[in-house]
Length: 324
Ligand code: UT7
Image 1 (tube, rainbow, N blue to C red):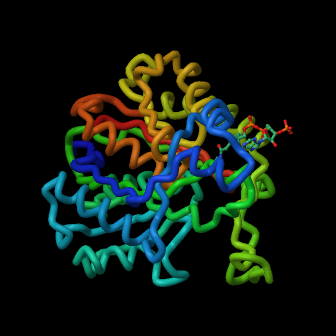
Image 2 (spheres, rainbow, N blue to C red):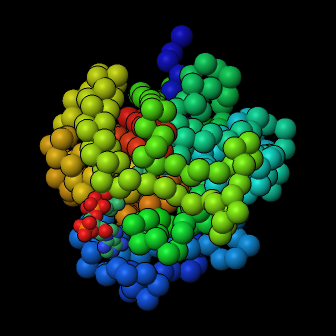
């Protein structure tokens, strides 16, 4: 029997209308455009309007991906959505999006792996397709992370943005996803976390204590080191050489982390998709947003090999090596 691959047949993305530049942030906190650009590569971010939710962005991104794939929502047999900022506690945002798309009846669930959420969701969806369980799957990464941002804290508020991206995966005899690698180490919780929740309880603080706590410098160091070994592991799992990768599509947290990974792969930055300048860190949204931008701008073409990777709170880290 021929090998079944999960193949991307359509991509889509969505961003809130409102753009906030570094100059805008200079008016709110003690920061500078120069600091933000040189330390992170970020120039601007999109921020959701009041009432605009993760589900709104996810639905729009999904509709665009379905249209690009020529697949009707009713044909889907699974929706997996990576997010850390669900609209409500339950039902899952995947269920809310499913209903809005008109895909009622198919399996739908969220994956919370912080910034690695989309790549985790892609890994899960790949297994469903390879096993023969699913034929057409919608995978989404969507966030309104700025809702967790403390706008008085310059260390974090300049880093994040809102957005969503989606892909349609279909079972195919043509490759496809070659390999996915998913990892986590909960021992690093203290370096990047949001301290409150339904079970642990909320706090009598602004925004009920909902805020991102990050030890930036420590996260940076572990991220660079971990992504180094992740790249090797992924190439090995796919039986490929670094020279066979056409494009690196990394998590868009910091341009310096992206450059370090590219260097490790011996790849010039011309082969790296960078959107952190325009979108900042959109957590689960970042990789599929970058992918959709690369596809729609004509950079990424059919038949090319793409390496997707992400790193985030948990810590979690994940990769996918695929032929587009
Ligand atoms: O997506 C999930 C994974 N997250 C990440 O990958 C983030 C990883 N970390 C980073 O990207 C970087 O560590 C940051 C961008 C967060 C920070 O860059 P850094 O080069 O590690 O700076 P730092 O934290 O060591 O801070 C350097 C200085 C400090 O001042 P002193 O102590 O040297 O006087 C900070 O107080 O920069 C100061 N600083 C700022 N200055 C102006 C911190 N934030 C700002 C700011 N504007 N927004």
